[in-house]
Length: 103
Image 1 (cartoon, rainbow, N blue to C red):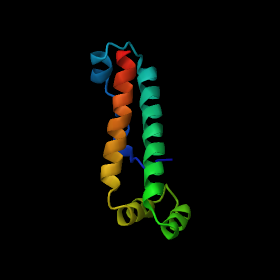
Image 2: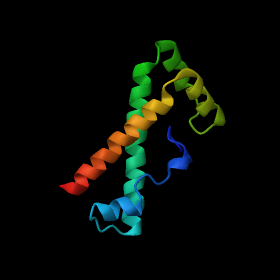
Image 3: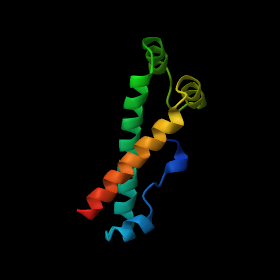
Image 4: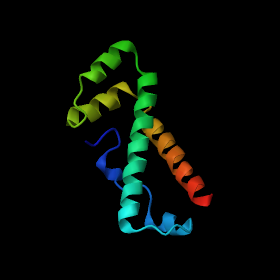
């Protein structure tokens, strides 16, 4: 399940970011952190998309297979601000991770 965020974003939290924050994470913990971050971003992006869509578009979205190439095309056609939403939510989640690392 790729979710909304495509496979090109497998690692949004880099080893350099973790070290800069002074966190001592194993590779497995870093992988889990990235998985959790991507899940969180996906949830937030989906929530934003749902808020943006008209009822007829929501019905169409519910019929889509998120693992099909057509799904990505459907999103691009029906959610013109998709990149902006993904960017904003990614920044928000990364900011949460940084703040958690600083506390």
